[in-house]
Length: 314
Ligand SMILES: NC(=O)c1ccc[n+]([C@@H]2O[C@H](COP(=O)([O-])OP(=O)(O)OC[C@H]3O[C@@H](n4cnc5c(N)ncnc54)[C@H](O)[C@@H]3O)[C@@H](O)[C@H]2O)c1
Ligand SMILES: O=C(O)C(=O)C[C@]1(C(=O)O)C=C[C@@H](O)C=C1
Image (cartoon, rainbow, N blue to C red; front, side, top):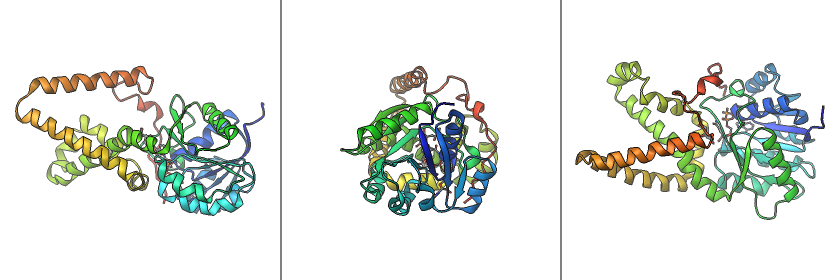
């Protein structure tokens, strides 16, 4: 077997993303030794039962002591607490990265606590599902997906290259962005769709009389796709909303304006305007499929990655 990319890897947090990393690292032989740390004993026991790593511990500090690569996969609101715990225990030359869905806040939370002898490079694999917990991960999650790195100015170029090569070995294409720009792009590409889904499913639920019967009964319609997104992890999405507040509010303002315009077209029977918008958006769907970011199967091909419903401890 060829030499692994990193001798010792520490995975902090072993939910959907951490456990997918554990699985792809094992499948492709990317690490000599993998230590897994997570906050709850129950999740750690689950990771151990799934044989996701070589060592398991509840102390984040202990897990990183020998690590050449540390990957923090926790809700973004927990980033500072983790950085404070691990900072003093990092070995010289260690690369510390994360997978959080927001970047400017994570950089602000973590960078001050990572010592100068280690390399901090924030990152975001743009790949996921609505599931959470260690059982939900799969080795192919990052295949043909983007991973965005948002290194700070002055970061060691060799460390950035090594981390890029790691993500490429996981199947991803790596891109680089400024953290604020990342947050603006992802606010519209990922955060708003989830917020809209949470909102529409919440509205349907508020209309209790229908929700309890017809909406659920006829849910193999447009509503079904919203319920998938709205089933995503509540803690993760609370943190995304709180930590990308400005960009999300800016995109929500644009969205509300456009929704009012759509409302007006419907009220005044402006069929031409409706046709123009619906034709334009159909083209966007086509370009996403052409870019290899989805399939044109009716259920988006997601049945190919069915996992057990996640118990999601904690
Ligand atoms: N789910 C997705 O689709 C997706 C995609 C890309 C990025 N992300 C990002 O990845 C991160 C993890 O998301 P996930 O979907 O794997 O969540 P998850 O809920 O499946 O897992 C989170 C894990 O973090 C652990 N944890 C929480 N606080 C901790 C702490 N202080 N110390 C150690 N462990 C702690 C939990 O025990 C759990 O194992 C989040 O920042 C999220 O924004 C998620
Ligand atoms: O496909 C999904 O279920 C996802 O929600 C994944 C998704 C996304 O919006 O695309 C969600 C959050 C991430 O940070 C990255 C990916």
